[in-house]
Image (cartoon, rainbow, N blue to C red):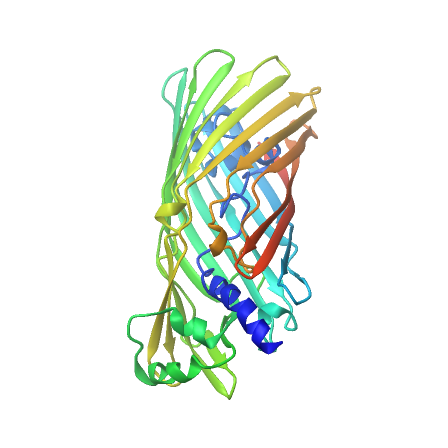
Length: 440
């Protein structure tokens, strides 16, 4: 049984160690919709007015709203259901089933100029497998992942003429990561990149003979991770009123420029059977979010009905070629680097949505979000199975008063199962967002 376990989990252990730069969300690392207006319409928001969430979608659409000041307060929840089946072992169900993402936005529009500030989660989720699951590999401790990626945004939008709006944002970006992972010692040793140093380097050959080895860094907080990085990015956008009923839009989200994601000097640990235990600093090197190009249109087919469609191209191949990390020992001294291929493909996402204004207070919305899976089958793993593809979305807006409005949306992603070397991983989701908006 132990021999069978070792064979069946070697490939999975490799996959787990390749996940440190993978982020959780729904279109790869990216949410299917930012703000309940976009989410309810399948993510289509490049050419429609969608409140302060426009600063995450297309900042030029901020100029499409009425004059005045708007404050939005929102909360979103990702509800994944993930399981991993390894032949010969009970199916392991992830205990990570609810991940909360708060957001707010403030925008002032005065004639031909809009500006503001906001904070939005770009992605975030994780998985948690029990200590007695096969994924723990007999180490006696749980395995888990939790990543959050967010932004504070400073948008500005201008009306160039009666047809053309342009916009831009400056974004302060951050990433937080927790990870508790197990692998065979041989697999861990096979991923060493370059020449290890110090006493840690001298201990690695013995570590490679171990039935399991762990790398852990976790602060168990719901709102931050043990490894952190910050940096900057931004986006550009435009809308054009082609006809009285047809609006076209485009946006370009720049790749982030963040520093290395790292723990404190003693915020990570390495361990193995036989009493091997060490603490140190873990760095995830050059973790970045990709550039994204979006084009879209909105057509007002009647005074009550608006149809919208977006196409996005996400450049995963430029940021997810390889995952690299470095561990520096604070106990025995020395350091070791790991390098693992990712080889994600670029992703195309199609968003289709409709909004129907029932009366002066109620608007109903619905949509589809259709995406390809960017992750190669042999790179899919139990800790970060970002494999869901298509979503069905619904939502509504209710005007409480001249100043107050509520928007709500939900999406469902059907089960996707990927057969990797040594395991079968399944994932489906139910997500929702709720927003309260105040105008003054």
